[in-house]
Every structure is written in structure tokens, then in C-alpha cells.
Length: 209
Image (cartoon, rainbow, N blue to C red; front, side, top):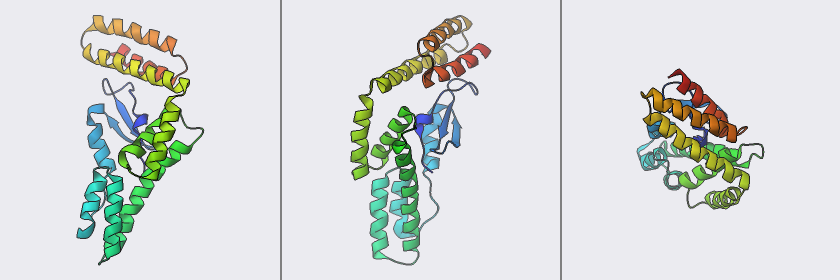
């Protein structure tokens, strides 16, 4: 299953901030503090035990280096050996599954633009040196030039700063009250956007604090 970090967002619950890691099919794979994200990603990229000849490929896979993992798996498969072909096909299948999930998200015309941007970034990060990565870079450049996308990205940037301020103000009712007003203003000026909806969820959490 592919993993989308664009689905990471701050929600009310479990403290501030609280994030979710969601697959391209909308299934929640993990939730918790954003600081634990790397651990969650490592878990998402784990594989079963493989033949000794495939261990370098498996290690590369678990580090998210899919281009390297694919090359190593294909080389091991070409040499053959007991159980090697089966394990190589398993690793190649896992790579195809994850990259395919990102590719599917990036190609959906109905998908949220930020989810598409995230999928394109994941392809470039974890599958470098491939034609898909080059195509993803070109599409990302085009998408980032869209005024609507630029506005949404700027809104998320501002929301991130507000969340940081809220986190620093935890335990100080006076400061939190002032930050709540900033959230209210943000929601009003960014009404209808996903960032505004996330801000509403954070604001509800702040009011309960």
C-alpha cells in the first residue's frame, strides 16, 4: 500500500499537534505525534524475511530507496538460486504496489491538488533516477505554478506556524486565548479550504484545553 504524508494533518485529540498517516485508499495507517512520523514510515516500508541474496535489496527497500532496491532485486533474480526468484518477485511487487499507489493518486483528476503534489514528491524522493521521477518533477513544477495551489500552500504554511505557537502556549490560558482568536481569523480568511477545516478541528481542541 502506498503512503501519503500529505494526509498528515493536525486534528483535535491526543494533544497538539496530532497527526494521521493515510494510504491512497483513505485507510488510516498510523496516528500520533508528528515527531514519530519517521518511525511510522519505517514500519510502512518493512518486508518479510528474504533469501540472503536479496537482503541488500530488502535493506534498500526498508530505507525507502526503491530505485536501488529494484536494481538489486533484478540483479539477484538474474543470477538465480533457490528461493531467490520468488523473493525477488516479492520485493519487486512491493515496490510496484507502493509506487503504483502514488502514481494513481498523482493521475487522479478528482484528487486534491495537495495530495497530488505529495504523491509526486514521494515518487521523486523514493524512486529517483527513473522516468517516473522525471515526469513527476515536471508535473510538480507545473502544479506549483497554479495560483490556487500557491494560495493553499501558503495557508498551510500559516496554519503550521499557528500550531507551533499553540504548542508553545500550552499551559498558559492567557496566551492560548489570544491564539484562539488568531485561529478564528485564519478560518474566516481561508473559509472553504482544507487548511481552514483543519484549523477548525485544532481550535475545538484548544477550547477544550
